[in-house]
Length: 96
Length: 96
DNA sequence: AAATCTTACGGGTGACGTAACGATC
DNA sequence: GATCGTTACGTCACCCGTAAGATTT
Image (tube, rainbow over all chains, first blue to last red; front, side):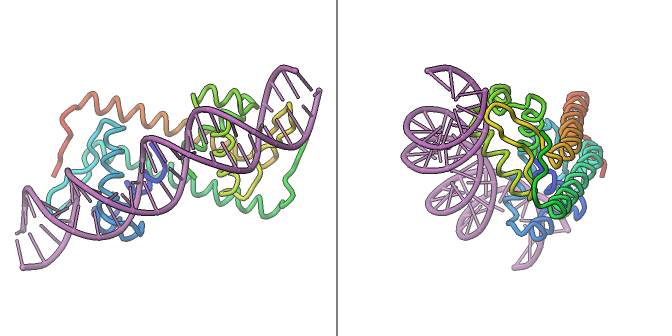
């Protein structure tokens, strides 16, 4: 399980569309399909119901979305904090 | 930023040793070095003080460790839950 | 027929492992 | 001189994009 998979999953879940998610991620639809499929394999659970026109979340998908969203959000936040912190204290702080 | 980087970081921080972390990850030391360096580049902050024999956390490293540990733990937990969930309800639950 | 997701295929980037190097005790 | 982290290098695997296929409206 990797972050780029979670980011893709959250986007697809939000848009309920692989096409839209791909556009936002600035990659191509097949790439999104592969990311999600690999994630599903690793989880051992199907996350979406693909119905030609409509894309829906399964129960497992709904459940996982809560976690995925929180994880992604937390990572983004932490990354921003660290970058700000680093900017503020350019010289790395040794403390031996 | 990816999970495998965070996992490596947490291990190195715990052991305070790239060598030990590599052994646990079942990869080789240079691979760990590269993971950490890439992570540091992305964060824009140095995480470790490499002092020949000793490896220490910088202030930035200490700070980031809290987040990284939580994120990794949360991912592992969520993954376990999802797998259990999937095991319990083999047939994916449609709900259209 | 149009739109959407999937599968197949070829190519490029990234990560790994081995080996050699530098530094510290 | 032994240990530990880094750098260089060649190889392999993974992921992407293009193209073609299947399905539904």
